[in-house]
Image (cartoon, rainbow over all chains, first blue to last red; front, side, top):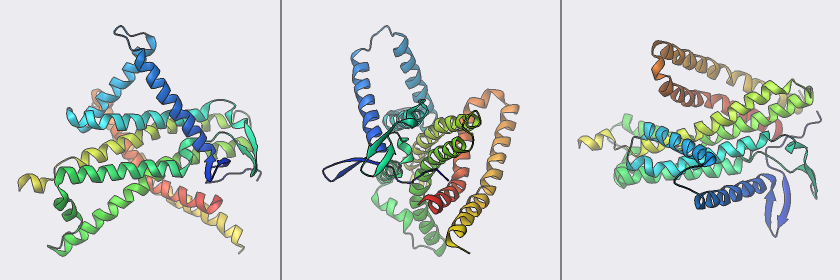
Amino acid sequence: MGLNISLAPEVLFHIGSFTVTNTYFWFFCLWLFLVVGAIIFKSRIKLMPGKFQNLVEMAISGAYDFTESIIGPGKKAERAFPLVATMFFFILISNLLAYIPGQAAITINTSGGIVPLFRSIVADYGFVFMMTISVVILIQIIAIATSGPFAYIGKFINLRSPLKAFLGIMDLIGEIAKIVSLSFRLFGNIFAGEVLAAVMLFLAPFFVPLPFMFLGLLTAVVQAFVFSVLTLVFISMASEVSPEKATA
Amino acid sequence: MEIEAAKYLAAGIAIGLGAIGPGIGEGIAASKALEAIGRNPEASGKITPLMFVSMAITESTAIYALVISLIILFG
């Protein structure tokens, strides 16, 4: 087949020993856009909102209400909301960037051959993995902070009975499986969408890929939602005091 | 069998078998959620996001199979 699909992102250029890949390039562009946009937006907030401010306020307050409905109102929601909402909007925008028409046609000539300038940021496993790792570490910290270090370790290493020891090991495996499942879900869906779109474009260039692209659009929104909601659910599970400790 | 042919076969079998379970599971999740919405249409705002989350969790095994077959094909 004339397709070239690679799991790793394509290398654009090097700065010293630092490799800049096309996903990193787009990540940096998007980061800059969001940060500068947020600063400009913040300086222009008015008491009487305009059209754009109204839209943003609606999106943010809707997201906040949804966060409260999952994690419960009050301080927990206030603390969890910035992280989860940032993740949602970042993943959503980076997924939707792939649907700008014509971006796939732009290629540049590098020392490693001709490579496409654009690649969906989430289709780089490195980025998704780092995001997931930071989420899982955060969850462990929250769990330690709420139940105390001894109760936290006691959840995994419990020698009171063989059954409890076994369940502790299963809990440990479950924590590690969180990293794998959370990251592979996002990466796999987006990468598979890209591959599917490429294969369909290769087989039949006109009209046939459209339903698949629509499916990809749906996936882009749903996966951004799912990743942030699962993060939220994990945080709320970790921040709940276990029933054993509540009765003790 | 040549190694290249075995690779393609393995990728096809991996994703084909891996998609069976989540396909059934997601169908059950969707049908139950729609049933619940049909019984109580006011609760659809609460049911739909939960349905998406549980479907995403159900999907994980298919995603594992997909990743394995992608690694076999392109890795």
